[in-house]
Amino acid sequence: MSEEQAFDRRMIEALICPVTHQPLSYDAEAQELVSKGAKLAFPIRDGIPIMLIDEARKLDD
Image (tube, rainbow, N blue to C red; front, side, top):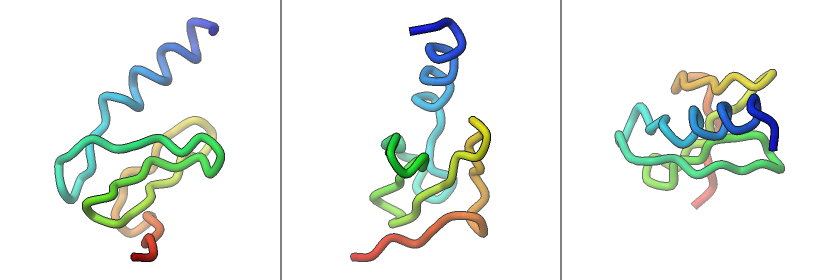
């Protein structure tokens, strides 16, 4: 793992859901950070997590 990948992973692990203030899970395949409590998936674009509620995808029940 390169230094850049390690930094990105630590940054992602430090982020919390802006709605529930709980940890997020990382979906590498979809490039999203998922908040199960809020039922939202926040996109990661060009390596940058977009933590805006308006940009999140609503998850099905």
